[in-house]
Image (cartoon, rainbow, N blue to C red; front, side, top):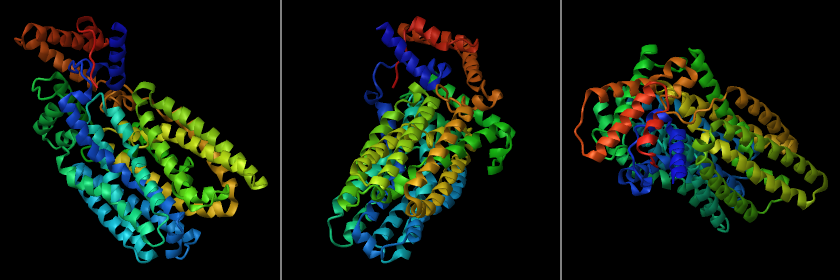
Length: 556
C-alpha cells in the first residue's frame, strides 16, 4: 500500500510539479467517478474532436484517388492538377490561421471555432455537390479556412481548461482524433468504392461535415478559457469556472487560489514586457527566438519527416510496390488509420510518465530506421519486381507510422502550446501551424511529381532530413514535463521560474494569518497543506509534508 501511494504521488508530481501537487484535494476516486471531473472531460470532448477535420481530409483524398469513379469524373487529373486539389486545402488553412489567432486573442478561443465549424459544414456540402474541378477546389479552399478556425484554438482551449493533472495527457491526446477522422473517411471510401456512380465519392465528401456539425451544435456548452478571462480583467468569472470544474464547488479551495494567482502573475509579468503583442514579439528576445525556432522545426518536420507521402499520396506509394487494386488500396488505408489511432492514444498516455524528449528522440530514430529500410526494399522491388519486397515495404510503412505517431501525434500541437507564455501562445502555435501548412503546400506539389519522376530515390531525401531532425531535437528541445503552463516559462526565462513559488509563498502567508475552525479531520488536512506550503516556500519538496501527514494525494 505504501509503495502504491508513493507511486501515485510521483505520478502527480510528474504531471504538475510539486508546488501545485501539494494543493490538490485528496480524492481516492478516479476522475470518471468524480462528478465535476467527468463533466469537465465530457465537455472537453467537443473541442477535442476538432482534429478529425483534417484527419478526415487526408484519408479521404487518399481513398478518392483509388476510386476509378472519382478519377474518371474529374478526367483523370494529372500530377499538377492533383497537387493543386490537395494543396488548396493547406493554402486555405495557412491564411485562415492568422485571422484565427487575432480573433482568439481579442474575442476568446470560442469565436473562431464557431466560424470554423460553420465553414467546414458549408465546404463539405459544396465538395459533395461539386460539378467540376473548379467547384471541388473552391470547396476545399473553404474547408482549409474552416479547419484553421478550429484546429488552432481547440488544443489551446483544452490545455487552458483541463484539470491540472490531466492537462498533459488531454492535450497530447488531442491529435489522436486526427485518426478518428481518418478512420471515418477511410472506411467510408472502402464501403462506397463498389458503387458505380458518383455517390461513391460524394458520400465520403459530404461526411466531412458531419463531426463539425455535431460540434457546432454543442460548442455553446464549452466554457471560455479562464486564462483569456483573466487577461481581460474578468477574474471572478475565471474563479467561478475553476471552482466549478476543478474544485467541485469548493469556494475555499487552495488549488483554485494557486491557479488564479499563478495565471495573474504570469500575465502581469508578460504585459510588463509587452503591453501589446505582435508576431514580432516571437523573435524580440533570446528566449522567444528559441521558442519560435522549436515551433517552426516542429511544424516543418510535421510534414517533411516523410509523412505527407503517406497522408495524401499513399495510392502512388502503393502503385510503386505493385499494389494497384482499388479494394486493396482502400483497405490498407483503412487499416493504417486504425493502427495510427491506437498508437496515438497509447503514446499520449506516456508524455507525463516518460517525458517529451525521450518520445521525440526515440520516435525520430525509429522513423529514420524504418524509412531507410523502406527505401532499400523499394529499390529491390523495382529491380526484381518480387512481391515479397513489396509486402516488406508495406510492413515498414506501418512501422514508420507507429514511430511517427509515437512522437508526433501527442506533441505536434501540444509541445508548441506548452513552450509559449500566454500572451504569445496563440501566435506561437499559429507560427508552428503556418510553417506546417507551408511545408505541406510544398509537399503537395512536389510529392506526386517526384514520385512519378524518380520513384523510390525520392525517399532518400526524407532519410537525410530525419537525421538532421534528430540532431535539432537533441540540441534544442527542452523537457517540459512536471510543470504548469506558467512554470514552463522558467525553462526559457530564468526570471519566470519563480512564479509558482511566489504564488505558494503568498498563500502560505495567508494560511498563517487566517485561523479557520474546522472539524478535526479537516484541521489535519489543512495542517498538511500548510506544512507542504512551508516546505515549498523554503525550496523543499512540498509533497514531503503531505506524505508525512496524509500519505498521498491521488487524483486523476
